Length: 259
Image (tube, rainbow, N blue to C red):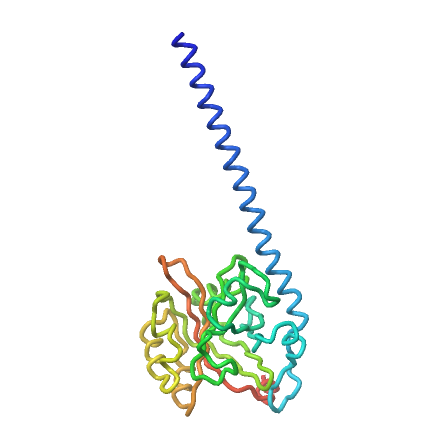
């Protein structure tokens, strides 16, 4: 009798293990499918948006074509590009910093969210310091490629980008790469630097992984320097964030011709 009970118990245990493995396998398959769906949806939206990417229409002002994008969503205020990365997206701004954290440019729920400007910043990018947010996605999607700048060779060789607005454009010159806490007031309180940005520049000099000193020196000579921050999640510690800082220099057609 005891052997029968032991055999039955072993059979039951084996069945439980088998069921557990099946459940785990099913969940893993679902998680993989769901992950692919998230990335596929983000890629589909980006493919649609890239067809509407603004081009400079007025060489004198740098103003770009935003009519089609703004017809889809009036919260689109800019388009940002970081050269030699996958960062090539429209920039939105919501009423709060949660508006577009999980919403695409069409206003639909999307875990990948959108690239968006801090709600406390001026939507016309007239502030001395502006902050852009984006999720850290695999394959470099959204702001996933900010990780590239944590490689010294890439940081040294890739310093350029552009910010397009309806009435003007800016050349972007990357000058710092930092890893900070999500609670870092120096980075995440844009209102702090609107009257005097020198404190932020000093903070970058003291805390960056890498710096381009020549860009910093050029900013120090400007009467009204402007800085654009790019921020995304990072893996160094629990609430780590990767920060890329770029100087904003008004676009001039002659600059592009000289290049």
